[in-house]
Image (cartoon, rainbow, N blue to C red):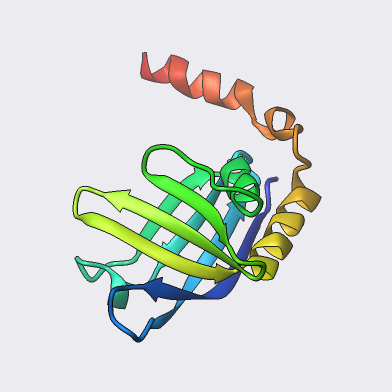
Length: 137
């Protein structure tokens, strides 16, 4: 039975204003989806007033702690020694979020304790996925 890690984290929205509002986001790693991490934003900071979850590769988060990484909708890069920027692109615009690098590293270490890097394919239940696909065909 796959496990899930959830961790609340303080993030700062990077805006053109002098003040960078803090927001509590939820970081999630699900052993049933071992290649991905999820970041959920609360309704008060989304355009439609509903929680918004971004899902992207766990490898992207890890690489972005060391050097600018990402293509497409999600980019991650270090911002000095203690902070990391996560950049999310949507049809409605771009959101920049600054988070504590140590917190993100701890989250990744907890996910690696569940599924070691390189072992993700062994954690996937490919047989179950194939059975589901065959039922849909």
